[in-house]
Length: 355
Image 1 (cartoon, helix red, strand yellow):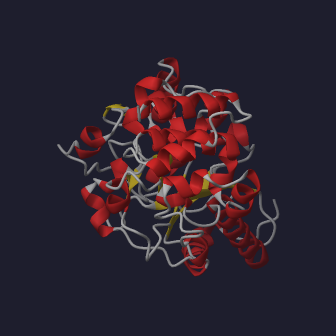
Image 2 (cartoon, helix red, strand yellow; image 1 turned 60 degrees about the horizontal axis):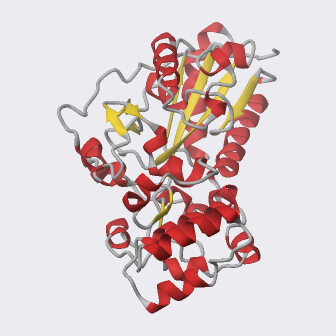
């Protein structure tokens, strides 16, 4: 560490860093310490219940997820940022969800992959701090390491964790990404967002198609459509297939129903805008994509990470839940002998729904 900040300048440095963050396109930046004792206990209990399903990475790093200094030695502060992502000029989600011929893709995945964009911005922020003050210890994260990002964001004053387990900001709802910089700079910390404004509202719990929110801030990932369509690499349990409806990549129902999202802002980031018509594409259209088309059309997108096989699996389920038509049945028939056993099994299930 070769930082050139006097003890009296840490508050000024914190304000400067926030200003630089705003200039880089972050809607808010907060700073917190690394105390996560209560959240560590919550994580242990969540894992003990098996709510993480096949997401072994949630338990693979032990206490590093809840103890930042164990992950990056020397860390004493976390700079937490948020960036809006809801795409402007996209088809309204309720219109897509209400039309079972269309494919619903989670709104965070409409444009380019947020991981790279936000990590690049965080790196630029770190470079700015270095140029201004000198070398310091840090590491940037965007959903890419064992980090309790929502708990850290709450502690940094960016919002509270809602009953659906997403972070909610009273002036911006929940349609935003989070990112962090772990650092050894003893910056002035912000006041933790200690109030919970969900009150008696249970809208997100009640709306969940698979009842994955088993209690306030308690999500059983094994039932969650986002998990089933993105994280799960094998067979989607039959009991959930009808409930998935036309959701082929993720699920936004708990956010769509949240009254706080009336304050949400559309993103100004061009990279987060809709690409390849994914806001309102038909299930048949997407099912007809070849593997090369899938790779080309999802280049630079978060969607690509699930791979063509799982993408096809998900759309087959959506087609099974679509209204019976010659077009739907013919599309499914073209892949009933697919080279992938996983896809074939879901196609056969889908065809059986139209008998």
